[in-house]
Image (cartoon, rainbow, N blue to C red; front, side):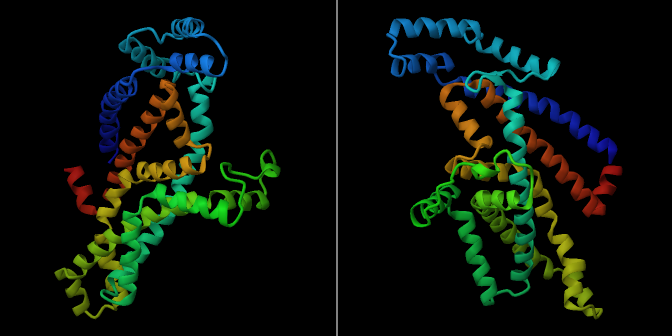
Length: 335
């Protein structure tokens, strides 16, 4: 298992390198950069003439290396990451990109993990409940919920909730994690309740989509497993229905969901990103969209590289979980 883990980690390095090249090239492909954003700001808000604004933009481009070819910019960026752990400098936030990531990524990951836990526990539980009561009103209701969760866009649900909160319930504190009185206060139960009060729409929407997928897959796999011959044999031996389902059928039906864990974190991150953009929360989503709009390339490239890394290492974790769940995988790896 240790050798398998080391091989997978080593194989992830060239994949990350290729993804970084492709990501950087795609981000740089559209015309314009942050110097063009500065020029437009000087003209529109500073009242400068085009010649004056363009001269300042050109000077900024030379000072920050934006005039160099894309290959040179990429080599400087990736070289700084490998040799110094330097992800570049954010021109918009006026601070190192590492500081921007450190501010926004932990809270984003925490939200995504909370959504994942809720989606997994509820989705798997509802899937077992629906499969063991096939064609009942419970099964029909949960199937309808699953259908809605997989088809209704998350940004649409976010817009509906924002409309209800702002225009129907007169909620004014949209776009922050805490109320003003709790912003710099130490942690307490009241501050935690205030946090939940602000982030519950994001958690609910992101959880709903993951819950629907988990429930649908669990129900389908468990129905197939319950018709397997070894399950019939267990029933013939006199085991109770609950023992047959939980001890024999459910562990084998979990295999596809375990493999799904390899992509679930990026999936939950994208769900959180979509809703966080609507709610204007200071997480990864608004930072990616904002940096792409103004050409702050190093922020965008770094966040995309982080999302790629979560996908790769999520697949490694899924492989390890599957090996722990299924002894046949361990035998294959040991062969």
